[in-house]
Image (cartoon, rainbow, N blue to C red; front, top):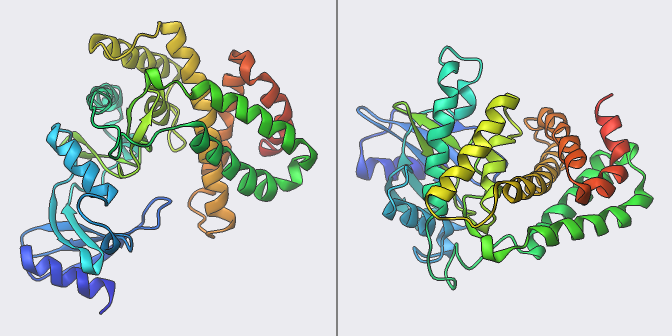
Length: 334
């Protein structure tokens, strides 16, 4: 049977005979998504080949969905599962992403939505659990951070940007990346992170945020998710709102007794995290463009790189990496 026929069969068991099954354009993921419409309701079907080789206790999406649901986080409900056929049926929370609010008729609601989303983020970051179980057993350790830097080197510097970057500088730049990664490994400050907390992974359903694509959650600095939201590759916030939201996240962490950092320290790690996160995102976009032949991400490369000079100019710890990457910035601006 085709994926669509398996989806139709599962939808029929919990809802009705489907009238249509339409593929949804996903983000940079190996999973496939479909919107299933029936007589009186609809659902979103996720097809993931990893599902049938896992269990409820080991499949990350189900583990983290259960965790977030227990803590009343707004996530789509699970309607049905057919693990053998690798299909999950999820509540359909619509098609309006946080990203879609920009340049829309309700653009004036954006600041209020962002503050509400930061409240949800802090609620997520307050969740704790046993450090021998996912997501608490995995973190943004140096190995993970360097894996992301190396991904950028491989698919960005050695491929997409190769004509604009001196390959002889890669060894020196990687050394700087190692120093930057070491700055971010501060387990005493770690909290739970969504891991991809940006405007394409937050739906606005019935005027309220709903969080999706959380299966890669892990421990890390609280700034990591804040960076993903505030220094987003897909939308650009005004400087005024950017600074307001940084302060709001910090104040909310303090109000919930979730950080011992001063505000200056918070801002320092925000900039260092932002540098790493934007480098990671650029590597993903380069891979999607050149290797996966997915042209939906190339236009996000330049705005993501455009964030970097601000961090580099603000933090001496990033200065040398910035100098080594200077030609890349000049090339991308041409």
